[in-house]
Length: 104
Image (cartoon, rainbow, N blue to C red; front, side, top):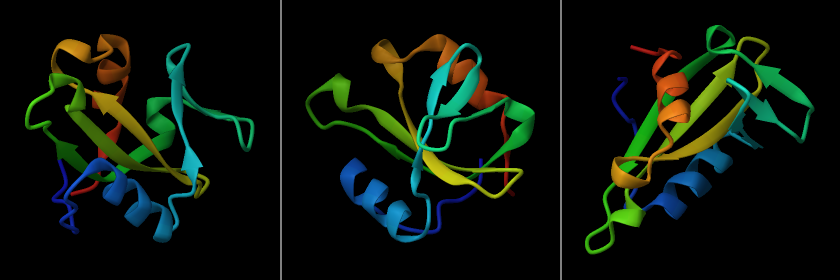
């Protein structure tokens, strides 16, 4: 995956940093697509690209293991989605995200 251009210390800092840089939409996975309720849009993996990502590991709690993805659609909508990894991951969401093209 693409190198992350910023060094965030935690998930909240990453989300706020991405918001400040224009990733204003929240994507959620449903029915094999990413949806954005705010603009009533749905996207397949081929309509998206991951521009950067940040992985965080909880020091004491495995529930804190997460990856935040910065995603841009072909029509220019920029947003984020958070995915857990490890025991708490959603295998369908993770599989979908792995199909999205990643910027080099």
